[in-house]
Image (cartoon, rainbow, N blue to C red; front, side, top):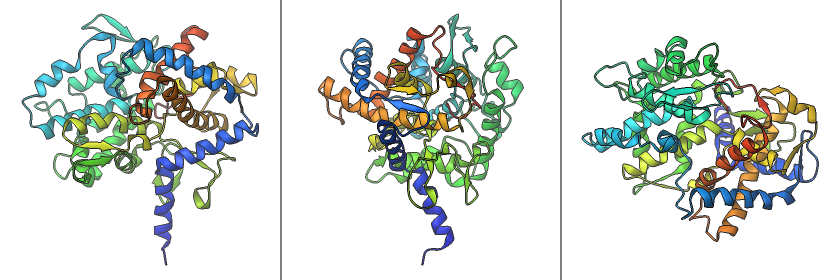
Length: 414
């Protein structure tokens, strides 16, 4: 007979599975199409026009349809500047495994510092005399902090993110690195600092994932390498390791059996069965990170399979695309005039509908472009794609290009 611990483990695994994310999100989309949700109405007949808009963005940006995966790596060369090239050439003398570890150190810290910056924040890159904002600005700020050894406790090995170095990140050090000031506020600054410090604690306490000696984020690569069978590793296995190893870092949220579930939220119409019913898992940052770890693994010789088992990302650019293009309509207009926390029913509903609609728009895009799901997995649709289109349509409709709904960010969700 299964024990209570076994039952708890099953609930945790259910809420971490991409299959559950899809099921719950598509369940809410079906309710939206039936006009049964409290906060959003859905005009699914507008989705084809949305696909046409996204197709235009794709053909303009990637006319040969040679779209890379949606990942943090795209942001490091923003502005047409090859920042990664010189770094990669300097790493060329390192053994392949160490190159992969360094890439993991960079990707994980940068992704976890990526949650929305807010409309007022700017980052000035002195080397290029260029100002960047939002996700690209966060990427470049975290890139320079990484290069300067901001996550390392060892001056001789600055290009790593180790347990001690992460725990030493402070409000003062992150404020300086991200150029935060009274007239340049960064949303969720304290949350980001706490996240880095908790990340360092998690690295120190989990040798299974991060190494018994000199624990660092990069050792997650070693763990995943051992999980590959015949050189193949399912993308869902990467996500499972990310969710399990990073569970301790999230702010106080829903816990099950003492395990912090992270980006999982209640919704009264979420559906489901058993103890996990009524909960919507989204795991935006964790899936964004999983997408970003695929390339270092592949460069190290691991073939990542089943990438389309992952879902779209429930963030404000993708979600904004569907509001701004008329697929989703907020039932109560006044809700667009106030800011909302991620745990509100409206925000959970919006993010869940976003995930489901990304699947739907991907189907239409493939049909329009005449490509298969294998040639155009969701990771390419996002990059080509919906995220870029969401940013563009926001700029067309609002001064400053902010999202259609105001978000109160703690630096760990959006």
